[in-house]
Image (cartoon, rainbow, N blue to C red):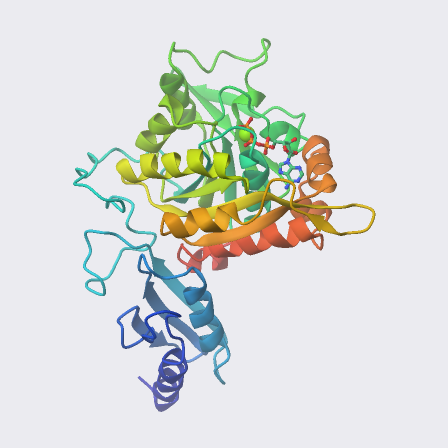
Length: 379
Ligand SMILES: Nc1ncnc2c1ncn2[C@@H]1O[C@H](COP(=O)(O)OP(=O)(O)OP(=O)(O)O)[C@@H](O)[C@H]1O
Ligand SMILES: [Mg+2]
């Protein structure tokens, strides 16, 4: 190591020791969260961050900001490991995007049987779910995917809602994906829209389309569908889940190695109770929940811009605290979000400076923090 990189490393390490956990007061270096700190001659600094269950999602961002502020640092790449209950606190180095095979929740859940990877070119899978219908899963999935693409990630969006696939509408897509293939296996190539590779059962459900889906059960349909789509290389695949905690969710989670789930709720308690049950379901099948998004959080009046709490207030944040999960952000109820959904103009691209556009972008950044940052560079 050269004298310069050595000095840079020391300065970055010193800056990182100023980042402390808000409750325990531990700094991120001596507590073992920051690992494998390296500096390259061009000023690129890399480290792993072993996120713990009790950590707010902001801790990684604060670590990034502290490292970026150091003189001589050109770029910071952080490989974030998700918490896992089986891994001792502070012990061992989690795999990038790891924890997906480790139970987060209480109880002795057996590790899932290893499965063949049905998504070979896809680095990470993030599902957007909720215990409830109509809370804005598809809206969040759409804006999350577009925002991640805007941030430079190679992103796909799979609409796994077999009951009411509405991602095509939210993207304003009337085109059809091409279906082809050889030797009896049909291959479906996703469409690209707003920088996102899109696939929805809604594209294929018309009568004049080839019968690419057969099988009496939803789980069968989903498995077949997932197996046939050629995503190519993706940093992140966002999956828009159907409502509920039934077969379709379990089947999807068992078919694809879902790295993390974004839970969507509205602020009122009846919705958050359902979401809590859904969180427990994902934990039981060893799928980490990344955090909670509160959607329809306050109504922004289009005339005066004032915010009114139509659905109550703060339920998402309370739920996150109760479930010991990070709160990923609150998206206000805005007329333009609904209009954008109907017109195929996601808020993050049609109105990036609106309250909802900014909220979606912030949520996307928090989600991206859970995955190796190198992903952004490969776009
Ligand atoms: N923040 C928001 N502001 C205004 N309208 C919104 C907001 N979020 C969602 N909507 C609207 O609410 C309706 C339901 O949203 P969406 O379809 O995303 O919910 P969902 O949870 O995916 O529903 P389902 O359970 O049926 O799949 C849509 O018309 C959407 O445009
Ligand atoms: Mg939906």
